Length: 249
Image 1 (cartoon, rainbow, N blue to C red):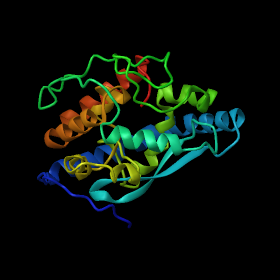
Image 2 (image 1 turned 180 degrees about the vertical axis):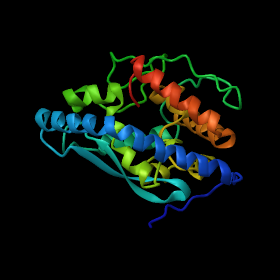
Image 3 (image 1 turned 135 degrees about the vertical axis):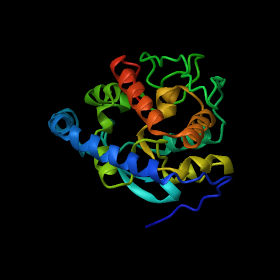
């Protein structure tokens, strides 16, 4: 398995009992969800095919636990064969903190208080509430069906397969692509000490409306404090975020 070399600052203790229970919960919830998820995925696939030319799935290399590379699955929500140059430049600047923005302080060291941010759907980029843009996606690049899938987070459903394969968990830091990880500062690598997740603390406490450093702070806070109680909280907050229409990552 290909690896991305990482420069970790700290190594967090492995809690074997928790990891076993977490894995059992991941597999159990995914299997229980399949009777509902499979018909939904079939409907999404047909809608994507009818809406725009191109593949149904978007498959991309991502960096997982310990720097291991895996193939992550999503439903395609953008026009096929787009030029990714501007997106790559934006994300490199975003990871390096070159995108201007005011970070919100919200007690990520133990209070677990989510940011009171509601990304505006009026902007195709999302906002941190101060007019700052953190998404390089133009409205014209997202398909009609893609907007619905992003809004409802249904585009993430294929990652159930990643969870069943043991490459991801239901809850954990969202995985980045290898060239984004290459831009990490040393302390950013601490988020790679656990399996990446379909959802995570940063996603329910700001999503794309906060800076990358703030996302990593949430992820490290999760790594330090992770427990079944926290995982269940994040899953519940994720459902509330989807049902409240706060928008997708």
